[in-house]
Amino acid sequence: MFTQVIPGEGTQEEVFKVVAQSVIESCLNGYNGTIFAYGQTGSGKTYTMSGAESWKLRGLIPRVFEYVFDEFERRSEIEANVYVSYLEIYNECGYDLLYKKHAETSIDKWNKISLYEDDYGNIHMRNLSIHKCSSEDDAIDLLMMGNFIRQVSSTPMNMASSRSHCVFTLAFEMRSRFTNIVRTSKLHLVDLAGSERVFKKNSEGVIVEEAKYINLSLSYLEQVIVALNEKGRGTRIHIPYRNSLMTTILRDSLGGNCKTVMVATMSTELENLDETLSTARFAQRCAKLVNEIKVNQYVDLSVMVKQLSEENSRLKM
Image (cartoon, rainbow, N blue to C red; front, side):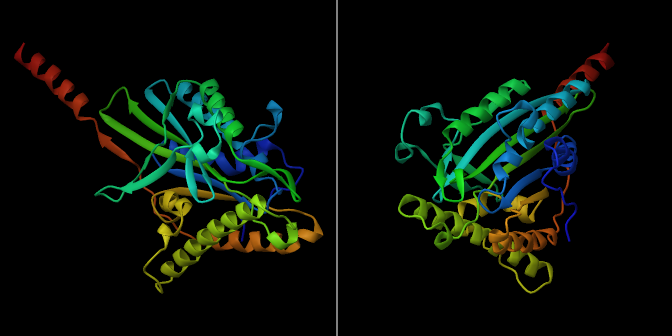
């Protein structure tokens, strides 16, 4: 069962309204969100997420920027900070796509991202930079820089095939001018590399090596989805998040405190029927997952102390 099917002639604006708008509104109210695109290589994942060169054909991520900053401008009672990061997972290694020096050197000289878990079970990433954005233009510039650095190759299935998984993350910190409550949330926008059959592509060398890592990580993602479904039925306890970097990073998105939407992109070509059916089955399994979401908020003690000090001064007077 699918929430909605958007035909090939559907517009980017229609996709945004159906897929992303409700998730963004939840994020601006303090809930975590994730949108990820899954499908065969060449089926339109990167076009859906980032779009084409024309501004009219911009994808979900640029439209998210526009919607977010318009909303903060409209909500004048909210003081908001927006931070972004852009992570690439290539051959099961994580890299920062917003580190400028990476544009000048080959990927074998890039700093790799390492993960560690704190005492509260939160995942932290070393060597991943975070950038504050004050406007839509700031965010667009960072997205374009990351997309320029991202690993892309020509394959028999796609002239510009993404050879890596990419996670563009927006983090929000929102304070009301009238209370001491701070709400935080994060929005993962994930463009997965395309699933593909190596024997069908008849490729060699680096392309085959990349395809093996892509398919292996997507297989681990499917294992996590299957395990979560089994856990929901009470037949399993352990979820193998740690099998891959991608499933570790998306742990909350897949089975935790997060509103998650999957976009399944499918080819209409008859020769790709097997891959299309596989994508549809994977989407069905994802649709059965149930996440428990809650507002992320805390009391800003510095604001509370200031308010109490002012009240104390008034009472003394």
